[in-house]
Length: 138
Image (cartoon, rainbow, N blue to C red; front, side, top):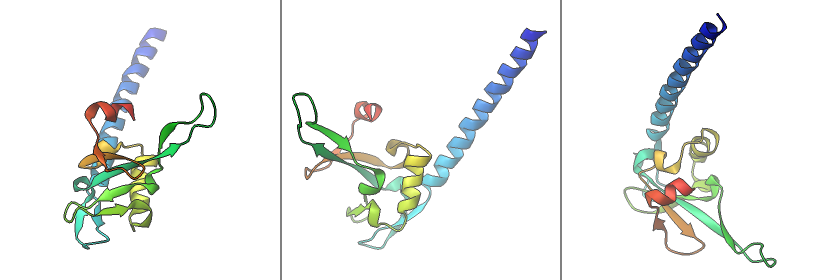
């Protein structure tokens, strides 16, 4: 009798997980279809067409084994690149900053799920396209 109840509960849990996966997929599509306007050229395109630039900041060495490493900046301090004019827009200054931050930081969608391409930028260096291997590390 107890095993039957356990089996029923496991089936219900599996059904809930499947439903959660479906709902999450729907939420992702809603975010990807959000319209963003470029602050430079004023053209509007869906989020899924924009590129994302993950900025990194450097921590100087501060002891024998402390520091000397790069850290990812918060989403609001990163950049998005307009698909029309290739201009980098600072997320913090963008009117849709809350949508981008909500999608990445609250809903925990990865940059690779949300944007066309993802670049990494360390300090003032030129942004480098993130490889699939690097995407799994971040």
